[in-house]
Image (cartoon, rainbow, N blue to C red; front, side, top):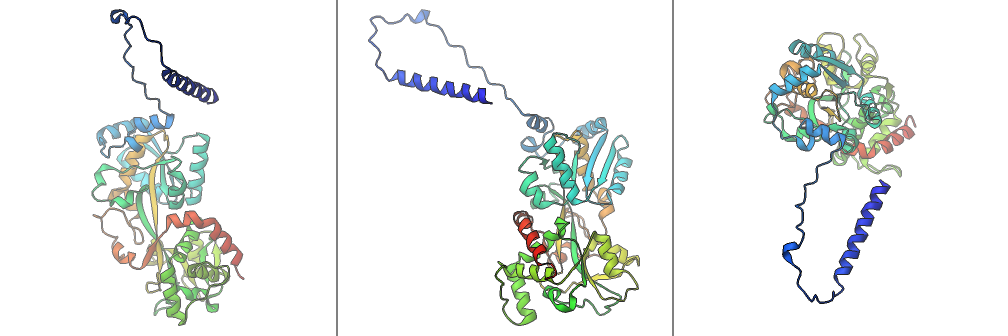
Length: 414
C-alpha cells in the first residue's frame, strides 16, 4: 500500500511538473514538423475491473448491487442441489422441523440448522466474518439493532428477497434484511388465579410496592432482546407520560439521573425487584404453572400460548394494559457474506416464506410478513395486535443499549 501511495504521489508530481512546463513559452519553430512522420498514439485500452473477493462473490451470485430483483429459480435450484448443503444459524428451536420439511422437498440438499439463541447467532457470525472463516450460509434470527448498526454496514450480511413474494411482502419489511416472521413479547398474568382478567391495567403499576418481586422476566442484563423490549417501552415518552397521569393523577417528576419519563419507568421497574430468569421457559414455569398459589406476572412470548390451549401453562395476555401490553419483535433472514452455499441459501429463504416452510412457526403468537396469509386460527389479526403493541425500536436500542444496561444495573433493587 505504501509503495502504491508513493507511485501515485510520483505520478501526481510528474503531472504537476508537466503542467508547469506547458506555461513556459517555447521558442518559435523555424520549420513545421512533417506530419507524415509523426508517431500516432495507440488507442487507450480499457482498464480491467479489479474486484475484491467479496465483490466477486456478490457478482457471481447476483447479490448486493448485482441483484436485479429477478431470479431464475430453475437455475438456482439446480445449482443448490450441486452445492448439497445449507447451514442456517437460528434462534428458534423449531428450525429442526423446518429443516425436515425442506429436506423432504429437496432430498439432495442437507440442512444443518443450529438453534444458537439470538446473542450467539450474532457472536458466531461476527467471529467467522472477522476471521475470514466463511462457514455459515443463512442468518435466521432476531438482532435488528446489530443488523442495522453493524452487520449490514460492515458487509457481513446480504439482503435477499425472493422475486416470488415482491408483491406480497411490503417493501418496508425488506429493509435492511427480509423479515421472516413477527413475534410478540407480552405482559401476562396467571389466568387460574385471576379469572376476572389481568390484575393490573397500567405498566406503571409494575413499579409499585405491591408488585415488588412478583414480575418474572428473562434477565435483561444477559439477554439483549429483553433489554431492548424494556428500552422500546421507555422510548415512548408521550405515551408513558399520559399513562403516568392516568394512574397517579399528577405529572411525573424526573430524578436527576433520569433524562425522560420513560427512563423513570425503567429505573423504577429495575428498583422494584423484578425476578430475572435464565430463559423464556423459566419465566413461564415461574408465573404460569397450573396449580400455583402465588399471584405473579411475567413478560413472556405470545407464541407460547398454544401451551395454554394444551393445558401445560395457565396465562392470558394483559390485553388492556396501558399504554401497551407488549412489543412486536422481528426475526430477520439474509445470506452471510461469502456463504459457501449461496444458491441453497436462496432456496431456503424462499422456502421459509411459503406456508409449508413457515408451518412450524404458524401458531398463535407468530405472524408472517406476507400480506396474503391471515393470522393463525384463534389469534388476533396483525392489525389488531399492532394497535395494542409497539414495534421493537432497532435504531434506538443500538444507539443506547450500553447506557441502558448500566442504568438498569445501577438501579436494581434500590
